[in-house]
Image 1 (cartoon, one colour):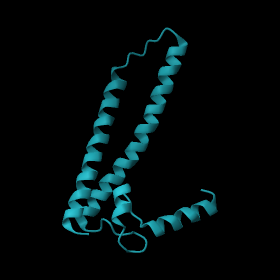
Image 2 (spheres, rainbow, N blue to C red):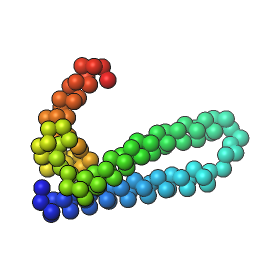
Image 3 (cartoon, rainbow, N blue to C red):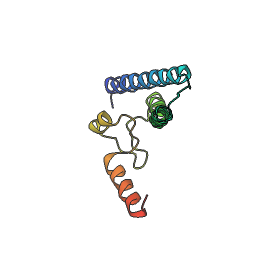
Length: 120
């Protein structure tokens, strides 16, 4: 992968990272600003359900943030775009679709097939 492509993916990853961190900060502010007094039990249940859903989303995003940071590290150490399993290059189309990918499409398909067989 040439430097131009690496710079392209670095920008994509940094932009997504900044977006996720901004959303996390906004959620934190919104949750700390919420007044917990709801006279109607139905309103309270709705707020708690919404809060739980928001926290599940943020947890998924937290995991994605870790993957983005690791992908940025791989760009810096020269291993970005190389399959961790077989050592071949990960296709640019795959990286465009999933910039945090660590496996080429063949190895990922094999992994998913094995997981399906094991019932994971």
